[in-house]
Every structure is written in C-alpha cells, then in structure tokens.
Length: 466
Image 1 (cartoon, rainbow, N blue to C red):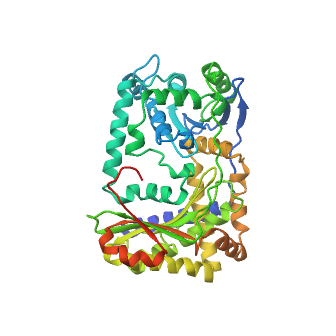
Image 2 (cartoon, rainbow, N blue to C red):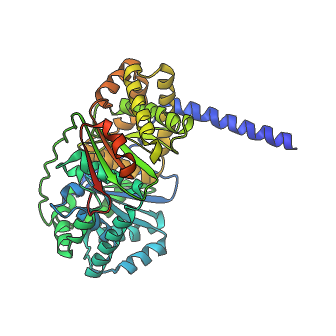
Image 3 (spheres, one colour):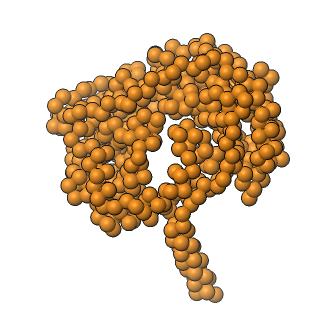
C-alpha cells in the first residue's frame, strides 16, 4: 500500500514537472480587453474573465511622490492612505463596515511616479463595491482627526524603522545616489517632512492632483463589458478635474561618476548592511528583457552568482541579491546584502569580485539557458489572477506599452544571445562607477572601508531625515 502511494506521488510529480516544462515553452498571450475614454477623460480598460465570480479593479492616478512639494515629502503617500478615512457620506468606520459586510477589499498606496488603488468584490456585490470605490476616489473629506492620527503614526514608524537598518537603508541610498532628483526623496516621508504636513496640504494636493484626466481604471473579472462600461460611466461620469496638475519635470537622473561612500553610524549594530550600485534603467528601456535575464544570473534568484558565493559557499550572509528598480525615469541598480561587522570588508570584496568576474568572463550558455527557463516558469503565475491582470493593464497604459509586452516576452527571451548578454553587462552593470551605502558600527569599520572611495561621508542614523 505504501509503495503504491509513493509511486502515485512520484507519478504526479513527474506529470506536474512535464506539464510545467511544456507550458513554459508555450508563448503566453494577454487576454483581449477593451480600452475606452469616458467623456470626462477617465481612461477605462475592461477585460472579461468568467472563470470565477470575482471582479477586480485597479486604479492608477498620476499623483505619486514626484508631485510632493518641497519640504513635504510623504504628502502623496499620506493623501493616498487617507482616501479611505471618510467621505461626504461615510465615516472611516462605515467604509470598513460596508467592505467587511460584502467581503471586499479596497486599498490605496503611493509610489515614486503614481498612486495605485485596488479593489475586489464578488460578482453579486458589484454595485456595492463600485459605489464604495467611486465614493472614496471622488468624495474624500480628510477629517482632521484622521490626518493627525496618521501623521503621528507615520512619524513614530520612521523612528522605529531606524532601529532596523534593513528597513531604512534604501532611503539612505536613494538620497545619496539621486541627490536633487525627485527619486531621492522618501516616498513615505521622514520625521521632518511629515511633521510639516497639514490637513490643508492634503486637501490642496488632492484637489490639484486627482481627477479623471490623470486616472486610469482597469476592471477584470466576471462581467459583461458593455454593461460594465455603462456602470462606470454612471458612477464616474460626473467626476470633474478640479484643477490642472502642475507638470512635473522629470529629467533622467545623472549616474555617479567615480566612487562615493556613505557610512551611516549605528553604534549598537553587530552587523553591516550595505548597498552598492548606481543609476539603472527605466521601465521602458529597450533592453529590459535581456537585463532581467542577466540579472537573474548575477543576483536575481537563490542560485545566482551573488547568493551562491556570499551565502551558500562562504556563509557570510543569509542572502545576497541584485536588482533594477524600473520607474518612469531610470531608477536604481543595487547589490544588497549584510554581514557581521568583522566580515564587512570580506563580503564587500567578494561582491565586487563577482561584479568584475561578470564583466571579464560574461555568462555561460548553460547559465543563460537556465535563467531563460527560470524566468519563463516564473512569468505566468504573475499574470494569472484577475487582480494581477488589472494591475498589469494600468501599468502598461501608464508606461505607454501594449499587449506586445506580454505576447512577445518569451520570444524576446529566446532571442537573447551570449553576445547580447556581454553587451548588456557592459552597458548596464556598473563596474568602476559605484555608490556605496553602509549602515553599521562606524568605529569598527570606518578605517577598513576607506579603500572603496577617495572620500567617505559619515552620518548618524539617529538624526532626522535621510
């Protein structure tokens, strides 16, 4: 009996493995969808998916942190979080109660470039869910008590996060790398900028930056597209643009030339967390697929060069990775990990030696084939649910991309050659021009890390801001 069970389990595993391998070789295609623009300028995308009686909404508003006024970093994020804290007809508690009653979800959050909202309801609760989404998006009132509470919570959270280097090192890196560029500012703000925000700022930001002309709404799920278009026109058609959003001049950030190092002193730290990198690429970079393949080999998965050397082979850390943050303008490329204070230099040297090896030796055909298969296998589960598809539609619309981003993905991966990989390494993986940001105990590591840059800057983690 036990042997038969084992055989059956092995057979299932083999069948699943075979099915996954076959599926990975099949080109994915984005399901068809309809894109329309309502008379008030609201962009709407509708994709019918009838497998499950569920409807997902994704909202994108061009009102991200790049729109924050000087000295008010975090205002976009605070405004987005407050949308659910009361409308003209519902209190925050009433909104939560009605959502709980239908088992729905509704959330908003800000990034560098945009605000993203998501909502999901059962098909039978469509009208109730649509009414709630329309209400919070069009009629928020930003009660003073909610503004005060959220700002207090945010300030306390920033202070608490500075006890954990891994939670704030990205903000220090952004500020040090991007300088005067909007991407240098922390999306969620810091102690000083949050303390400067008032309810009047929130109201003004909403009225200046929210409206149908700067908003995209995707709906995916079990509905009829013609009926859904009518429902959306009824619920959002009267929404008017209150003001003309100020045009944000978003130049490409200038990559750092040479080497710069920031050491953030955390006197009680027994470990050093570090990021190494420079300005990377935008979401629409023509080499984005190839960059993803090469980065998978270098530091994008558990079996990558970085993780294998720094974690598996040497035991210097529990994890090491690299990645590109792709925004409207080029974001950052970083190598990230952490290690004990006494092995800080050993870990940094090893990471840099792997970067040099990548440039000098490139990648092998075996590594290339493995990374291609891995990315194909990981891709489908990222775009299979209705909420994932809704989020994808507003993303593609914002970046000016279309269904070819999905439909041609496998073909673009397959077309990547070793020569392409060598060019990509040379063009996008910085070798000599590097920015280093370390958080650790300065009196233990300061002298040792001086070798990485002509001059180093040291600051205390306890000071306000980044």
